[in-house]
Length: 456
Ligand code: IMP
Image (cartoon, rainbow, N blue to C red; front, top):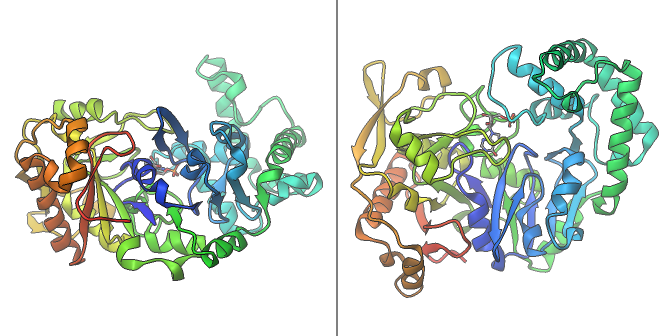
């Protein structure tokens, strides 16, 4: 199980690439096109959003019913890989339609702006939770049923869709929106709009049909029974969890290890000590709205953004950047049930002259090392920073070569000190006494990793 230990974008794709040779089956069980996993292998770069990373390694890549899927994007995404036949989707997975995406965008201007990826995640998970409006991947194979479900959704949300249509019409008139990209075609009647959605989803269903299976749990059970190694890939990060993240500035699914594993139906087989991995970035980033106590709105923040290439894989948005926050990450370790950490991008931090670590917060005049449950309180937190000492420039090649013999000792002394300080703080603040940082990533490519504690 690999999950994100912060607000997403920690480098999960990198860790998954390191693990890939030891994995037989890959699983995604929550999230959808909001996530972006970059996988670099054999000189090729894959940008996955919905497809499990295993597809880049020609390994079975299973998408279980907990996800929400945009079928119009899925087919193209699968074509990046040499053998798309490894990708299988559970027929019960929820579908994101244009209408869901329209309502996601509408939500951003009509209430609390969360800064969503506008991929339709929230509305699609709403449809799933309310059941009556759920459209599944399996429904796409039956045109009559699909048409009924789409008509039902469009009727239930007629008023909002009309409002989006009006707004889009204005944006088109102002030249701000290409009519081709309008999610609600204002020149169409509701019936015509429903026909458009039905036709495009039915066509996508025909292309995806060979990948759709009724029940992916049978495949996973067979893999378990034949002692295959299964990797469940989390998406986003614990601090974006719908229930225990910085609500309401969160995603619409659960992102903890426990919840993600349960969605895959595999909790009973997971190895608690060695199997609950959290990917943690050596500094912090966040996309979208919401409190971020260690945010750097200055030249140092910009330096981290440029050196770390901190731009969203899904939206291209510049990520907000800041110091490593031990309080927030320790909370993510506890809530997310992370037992081992994979620390990424320490090489990026070496570009900064005086790196800092946030060890506690000052909130309303009082010092605390507890992460506030209420996002409004977190918004008032002032980080208490400790100088971490400059990290020497990291020569990736030399370190990776030396790392094969020397392991952790191959890292420069001040980088080791940084890792050890982070590890101690995370242990102390999370209460997870056996938490450890087992590997450190020093570059974007597979294998550019120093192993501190053997993990496979
Ligand atoms: P949504 O998931 O599109 O509804 O967006 C909700 C919040 O989660 C926004 O702040 C997004 O920027 C954030 N978010 C969603 N997916 C990811 C991800 O994969 N990485 C980082 N942030 C994400």
